[in-house]
Length: 158
Image (tube, rainbow, N blue to C red; front, top):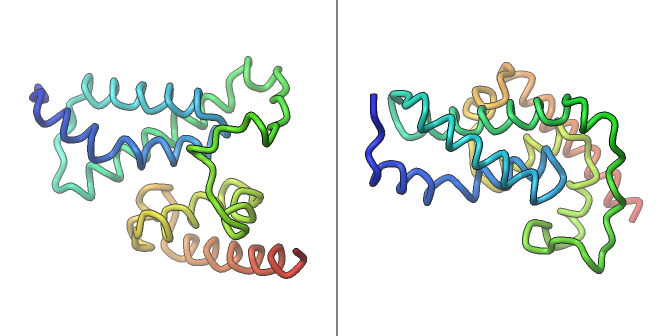
């Protein structure tokens, strides 16, 4: 199967921002996130998968991004290097969320950040999130509930 140029360009235009935000949440820096998105699109071109609808394509692309991020985070190089502390003066503000609430979200553990991002920013349903993160619907509900409690606690402390 071959993906036509117009179809590929449409997919890149439609999903690249979503994929970049998802990768950024998992990687923590823009450079790695951009590399992950590029690699995900290469996989999309090489595999040329057939999708039942746009939601299936979106879920597949996000799943590839998440898996690539997991692979990066498990890599020998990543485990043996220490991430530099983020300096607010030099931080990449184009990918950071504004406001106290999103600062609190960014302090949550990864599993909670992911469901919050997908549910509130991407307007995905619990079923869609379950498919993307490969968890059951009840697990996604539990993660959302726990994330909300943690956010409430963090915001009340501040």
